[in-house]
Image (cartoon, rainbow, N blue to C red; front, side):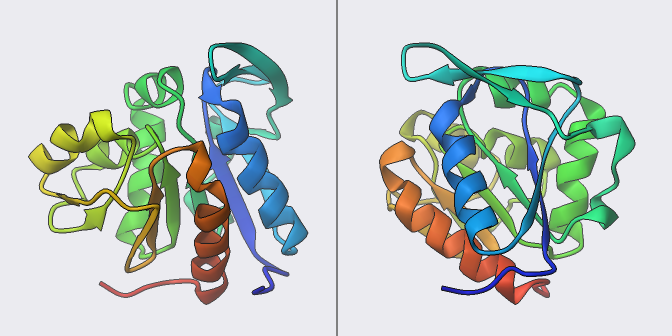
Length: 183
C-alpha cells in the first residue's frame, strides 16, 4: 500500500454524513500515514447517519472558516443524503471543493458526495460514479456516469455506496500518494 506520510487530507462534511463513509476512509488514510482533519462549517461534534437512523457523533477538527485548500493535499467527500445537500448550499464549502479541482489536487467522493462536484460546475466531460439516484444530475452536469465499484478520472475517485469502500479507500490512497494531476 502507498504511504501517505507528510500528506494532509481534509474530509469535508456536515451533519447527516453516512457514518461508515467518513469513518472507513478516515481510518484507512490514517493507517497509510496521512494527517486527516474533519472539516465542517460547524464546530464541536456533528452527527452521523447510520443506514436508517442517527449514528455516532464525530469531533470536528477544524471549522471551514479556519482553513484554506492550500493547507491540504487531498479531499474526501463522504455521502449521506443530508450532508451534501447542506454543504452544496454553502458558498464557502463549494469554493473549497472547487479549489481542489481547479488545482488538480486529488478528490475522493462516495455515494451522494458527488453532489458537491456538481455544484462546482467543474465535472463536464469527467467520468465518475455515485449512488444511482444521482446519475441524472451528474449527466445533466456534463459528466459521463458509469455503474462501477470505483472510478478514477485524473485524480477524481468516486464510488457508489458503502459496499464499495474497500476499493474506494485503496484507490483514494493510491491517488493521494501521487498528488497533483494536470488537466
